[in-house]
Length: 142
Image (cartoon, rainbow, N blue to C red; front, side, top):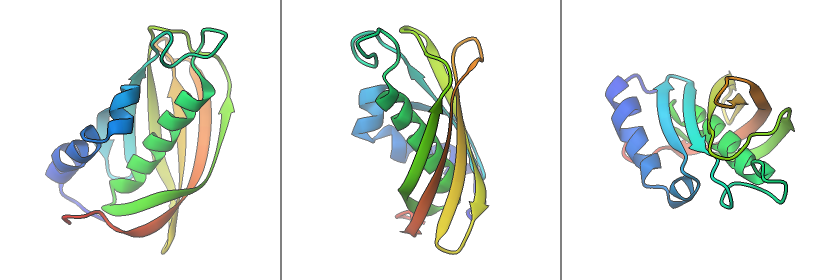
């Protein structure tokens, strides 16, 4: 695992700030720690919403995948998602800022397992997720 707080707060954030898909959805890193991450995403009408004018499940799944993957990346390892599940508990309405928190629950030799939770602006749980990630190597530059 990497121990540099500078690497976590500056370098890893910069890597993800340059990701076009994260920028398209408006996903931002708000907090990083070893094995943990916190992200935020606005729910913008006609961008993140479905036909029912609530957050699209695909947008929430993208946020969930990102928060768990970034939690894994805090170890300095590059990972890809093998498997992910998500339980949608409550809908998120447009114009609310939602937040996601992810943490590693298993760090193996070739895989990691992470969990994530997504909350609305009232801190109500809207989704719970879990994923398995394959370690492909070290993040470039480490």
